[in-house]
Image 1 (cartoon, rainbow, N blue to C red):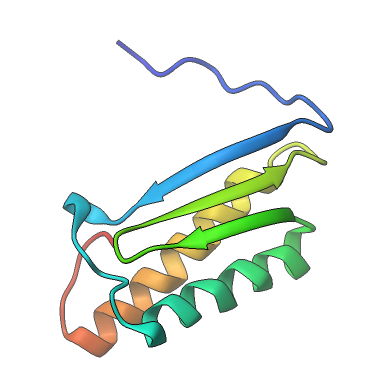
Image 2 (cartoon, rainbow, N blue to C red):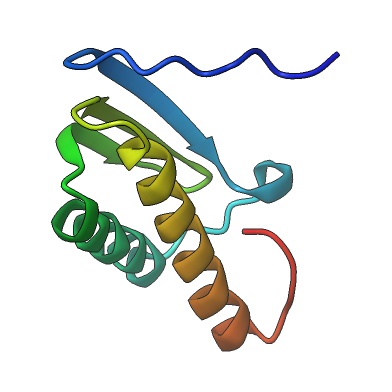
Length: 98
């Protein structure tokens, strides 16, 4: 069954959980967690993402964000996930999803 359509609800708060691939502990080192946060705040500057709070654990991230403009959350998460995966894969000589 296909995923339900996402609706834009301006001003609403969203709790987003972003897990590492196969629930692996890919963020167990502080260096990797800092890189994730660097890309998160780059997305904040680039797209205007409103980050209210966050928690970065060793295998997943919790984000509390506010929906301000349509598509901002999706674009931001896509940027963070892609850049973090690229850097991690280059450093660890691996490929695939992060």
